[in-house]
Amino acid sequence: MLGLMQDRPLTLPHVFHRAEQFFGHKEIVTAGAGGEATSTTVAEWAARVRRLATVLDTLGVSADGRVATFCWNTGRHLELYLAAPCTGRVLHTLNIRLFPEQLVYIANHAEDEVVFVDRSLIPLLAPLADKLTTVRTYVVVDDGADAPIPDGWLDYEELLAAASPHEGRFVVEDENTAAAMCYTSGTTGNPKGVVYSHRSAVLHSLITLTADAFGLSERDVVLPVVPMFHANAWGLPYGCLLAGATMVFPGPNMTPQAIVDMLERHRVTITGGVPTIWMGMLPLAEGRDLSALRQILCGGSAVPRSLSEAYREKVGIPITQAWGMTETSPIATMATPRSHHDALTEDERADIRARQGQPAPFVDIRLVDPDSGEVQPWDDVATGEIQAAGPWIASEYYRGEGGGAQFTDDGWLRTGDVGTGDRYGFVRLVDRTKDLIKSGGEWIGSVELENEIMAHPKVAEAAVIAIPSEKWVERPLACVVVAPGESVTAEEIIEFLTPRVAKWWLPDAVEFIDEVPKTSVGKFSKKTLREKFGGYQVAGPTSHDPA
Ligand code: ADP
Image (cartoon, rainbow, N blue to C red; front, side, top):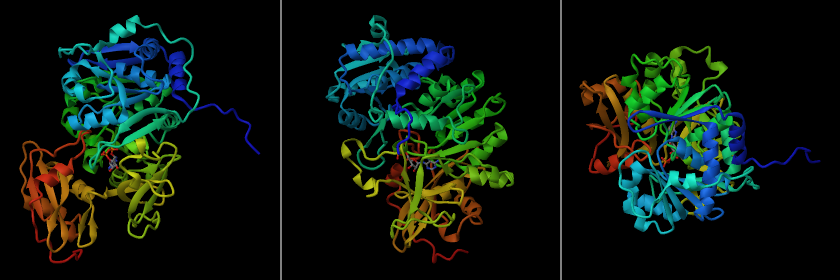
């Protein structure tokens, strides 16, 4: 017997029309380069989306053509976020921080037809234009920068002014139609294309509204620091439109000073970004009125416990950790504490917040031993590769390229992360498979070690990588950035770690560096560190004895 409910597709036009009809009075704020903010209403924004839809037609973008953006987080970027998928096209957010060769590869692989580019970013894009073989049109979104505009590149505002608005409702009949795509930053091999569908984007947006995830509501004022090209700003833009939340976009000025100013001025309630952002902002948070903040979302890399605790002490709320990937849309797990954690001490709760968290509803997670292939128990001891399945988890990469091995025969995504999970499903990530240090056949979790080192009050940042050892094959090297105005020795670091980790986990060498190199989305680039310190050789400990 079949259910007798209406079979209506889950598509982004609903998100658009709901916002247009019910939240027209709400605000969308965008900061300019100099910090001055411009504000529009959702009603004005929606009218522009309707015009933009017609512009895509007049530019001759094919029915499912890829509409690329090369933009900061702005209200105008949000126009493209809806106009492309609501007309059946595919939004392709290009990462402005990628190396030129990667950008060329990605734009050509996705077969982008048009690129919308913020004027301040033209100097990064124009030199590549010759190599972008499928792009026919460039449209400049003028953000007030003075970068020269290449001949033949069109003006966004002129196109909008000349266009008549799309009439009536947008219709996308099949919810499995592609809505947006993002490429993984490709820390190994070529970047891989992840293609989101309307259905996955809608379901993922609904999750952002649930209380134990982001808990987005109409009352919220949301500032996504995470770029709109990084896994669709973690679903915040679509989630905000669905909830009717006020949105505040940082625009081109992403300095910690500009972010803290905006958080205070606009009484932001929810913000999100990678740990690097919150590390940079911490010294500036003192004395600021951030009392409206109720959620600082953080993911993309492990959130150091010490960082979260510093926010709790200085700002009044700890950081909420989430774990996911471009391939998981990205919300997979969230570490919002649950009622059974209430009885714990503050210190124990900090340990919970340092975990990656419980799988979101509809996300299935299993931990699989990489050698035996056995699924591991949720006993908080056994570790395994984290595999994920669910309606907003990728089933394959665009054109099936670059990663068949990343999907299991029974259709799960192999995340490349290794962790354990407790009986409540709270996952604790130990490492990425490619970063794990295999000492004498046993694992040392670099992420765990980093967290311990970063808990040292005189350490600003630390990254741990594997270096060669004849006896043990690999041993840990700690690359440490000393906090401003402090000094610390290698011996002090080791002494600090000694009571905290097994003896054979202690790094064999400590290198002091000025800063940890970062990837295009602000994560520690261990690849760069491995290249730099590749020549190291260490003997390692005499044994793996724990004490
Ligand atoms: P890339 O894999 O190219 O870095 P993603 O941005 O998709 O691109 O990164 C996903 C990876 O980031 C995850 O597989 C995981 O290793 C790491 N990651 C994301 N969130 C967390 C977190 N909360 N804690 C630890 N690692 C995280």
